[in-house]
Image 1 (tube, helix red, strand yellow):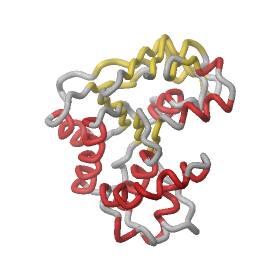
Image 2 (cartoon, one colour; image 1 turned 90 degrees about the vertical axis):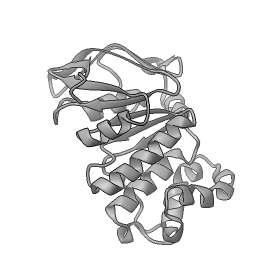
Image 3 (cartoon, helix red, strand yellow; image 1 turned 180 degrees about the horizontal axis):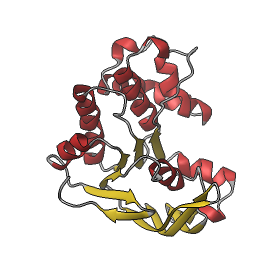
Image 4 (cartoon, rainbow, N blue to C red; image 1 turned 180 degrees about the vertical axis):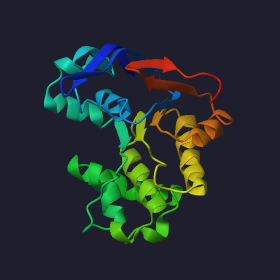
Length: 224
């Protein structure tokens, strides 16, 4: 589904990482760890075409992102749900409209109206549907971000530090939702510093843990 081959990325005149090989197979579950500044967010952006590799190849659904124009990348990204670290919303729109935004932008809003109630129920936000984003707690915002990411039924879910600003109980709830998506056949890649989240996931689902450190991507050891 997504494959990186000998990928390097240079930022600010310096090499952030190089020689990166990564394959996200259908239905697989991955964690990406590493110190702050190692390039985890950048690697995720390469996976959904927000950035283009300095060298090497990034193939998304068998297409090389370097050869794709803006429209082709936009179409491909409809198959990838992204949960951003800052999970920004439009504060003047109620939660339900924020969740529906990807379909609205794509001109497909009518397709999601029937499923919206079930989706909000799945993430436990039925009663918050009419609330504005500033009225939501951190955990509610993260679950809303996940709902928005999956509203278009993507094949791949990429999550950047989705539990960074929420407590342990809420992080476990969010993990449960991500595992449910994986069991439905979705490919999941989560960038995180949260080792307890990784340990909890490994007890429930087949998981590959990757570490980005010293400009290289490696399989993490069993110490996690």
